[in-house]
Image (tube, rainbow, N blue to C red):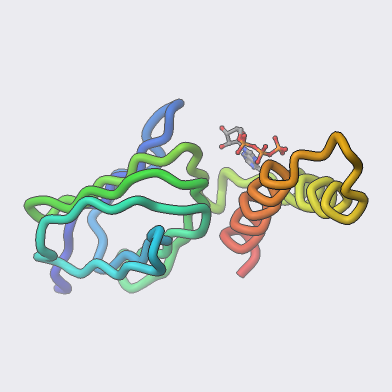
Length: 133
Ligand code: ATP
């Protein structure tokens, strides 16, 4: 059997995942970060993107909108601002959020908060990727 480690993903409204996994890739602030069993202790910042993990040979995805990762004693904990497994994601809602953000960025009226629209767009794209790909 493949070596595993425990992966927990927690969002403000509760735990999204608690599972033994073989491999995980997270969207680190400085690029993607791959974690295998027996990884050295680590704390890292996470950005908006998709977590990919392998469990029993199958790849699964979780969309997150930033947070922190801790690796210690073969346990990986992700504390995320928001986190959704593919099952939890409402694709139509994410597509609508993407279109809304794109329209705001295109029109760029004086009342538009560009950074806010850009981060909303990134969250929507992460959700679509976690659901569709
Ligand atoms: P929207 O404009 O559709 O509300 P958002 O990016 O502004 O999207 P967030 O503030 O990131 O939404 O999330 C608010 C809550 O709604 C969180 O609990 C998040 O997990 C959930 N959520 C947001 N979008 C979706 C989605 N497409 N499917 C499922 N849950 C979602």
